[in-house]
Length: 328
Image (cartoon, rainbow, N blue to C red):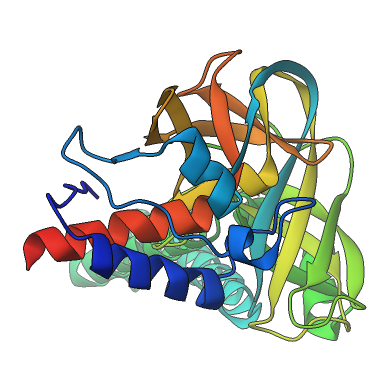
């Protein structure tokens, strides 16, 4: 999204930002500041580069905007992700279809061998019988290939899951979930530690999950990596949304920024960066996970960059309303 600030829209922006402060609540009151200082509107954006807003130190203080310097970080990581409890029936149906197709192919193969043997021994098997057996085997082989592809393309690593997992899914002792990582987060292998999952609608429902492998499909909105996981059955209903926390092995080197400093625009993370003494810019970043309550940023920021940590929602509202005013 490219925002072109309006030339002169002070009244519109003042009203918009006051409304945003009340509705969005993106600005917390500065310590020791009075009510008027916390509710002070930001100045209207001036002409300049896209995604940039003019912001003097006095205006930032009145609006309750706080900044801090990004610091280097390297260490263990945590990735917060969404998860969805899956219906196991399509997986079980695909496994059963594969087993049936394999049985048919085996039967067709034995029948062709029998017809060929009878034909060689001049017994009651015509050339037509042999060709019919060959056609039946070809059909059964194609059906087997189709069933195999459906299982592997639809369920990835679960295609090789044994009968024990299928039995657990059938009796409800195990459930399946797809964990969707945020954009920019990657796993090279399942983490050694178990994944903590919590029901989004009921934080009292908690469990640990085990990653099975990469999912062949992803969430069309998030567009991040997706992984399949097994978790205890009986707690989570099919379709339930979960929050998952993954403790990732290894270290990610970059800069650490507070979680509150990151805004998500079109499913991509960004921060507001002070590019000059009186200017702020929204910049897209790449995150590799979290470490003790901070995002690890691997691209888009450098140590020493000053970022906005409080009031990001008001800055984003200023962009939206200035773009609307420019369009009008």
